[in-house]
Image (cartoon, rainbow, N blue to C red; front, top):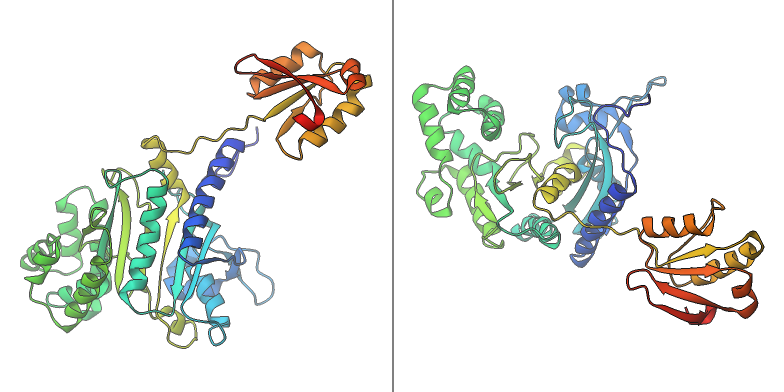
Length: 415
């Protein structure tokens, strides 16, 4: 028996319709915020994909067959491809550049709930603004998308932090060369089984027991007022000011300050955020932040940037859990039943005419009338028209409301 590849998902008509509905809601919101939709090739040079995330990302790439000196891999996100696209037109395009996408990605890893090998994301990237309004803009798009899907502050929340703030605070306790590793451990904190595991990881990274206690105490500061009281160096102060400015532009019903939110990737430079369901029973629904050095890393002129990606798989899981998944109807407006073969050519012309205004199903199995009526019921057709030789001659036929059972006579122009 044929089986789909592990970590992939088939989209039957119902699932495909839901995906399209979610994407279209996201599109409408992005358009209202002044973002334009873009698309990039499914594959990029491996050297381009690995430059942002390091050589270790190669183990997670789906590699395409190598030809001569070229090596390509399927994209695992769109931050890199869109950064490349921006760089190619950086000098000629008006700033800020506000792009969004709905696209398919690939990552070779062990499949888990909400984390697939082939997956879809919705996301935005904003290039050219270093100001807090840009960070707030993208976070507000994410919040508005979830609200438009029927979710409220009781269903999800945003964890907000700043990398400069966190790194500045850690520099008081950790040597600079260890900061990257410590940040990655802190970012995993919420996924660890207990405090002992977190303590052990910090200890193995060379952190003294007394400093582990200080780190844990710092991470408990979950309000602007509490963080205000912590002694900060210049880097931490810069990050704290950025955090405060963005926080002031957001709906606080949805936002929680969380110093353990770090977004493990090293290219983030400022405000970062993740969105979770309130119970935190699922993976992150959405994540993003500021990456002001990436354009320059790829050879462009320095340009600030910020963005996010929202995973379709985890979002769908949350919507199912909250019973907010869009309900899609495939029921046609009309079903045209054909009594006999002589009437079929004229019936098909009538079907074509009605389809100018409505969705119409008809018989392609040459079934008898009884079986056609059963099929019309099975697909939920709203109205029924039966056509035979008499209806063709008279130019008039009965239109039956399948819900009420009421019938009326009509000509083709009156449907």
